Image 1 (cartoon, rainbow, N blue to C red):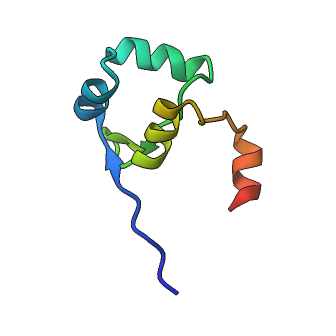
Image 2: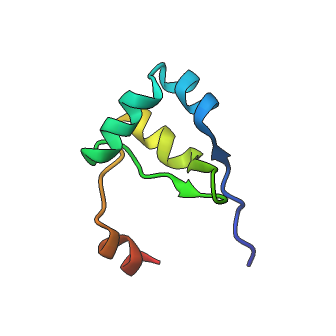
Length: 72
């Protein structure tokens, strides 16, 4: 059984999609109000499109790091 490849969105597209600035998104991340990014390389981060869509739909729920590790 093959796993579906998760699409990733980076800063520019994320800001356009949410109509929010990077600073606003960073504040939401710091307050656990938005999904944390995935480190793609030393200087590049991105977000799972599925998590961004959950945020837009109002269905995204913050998971603590330890809970997220147990879910995998």
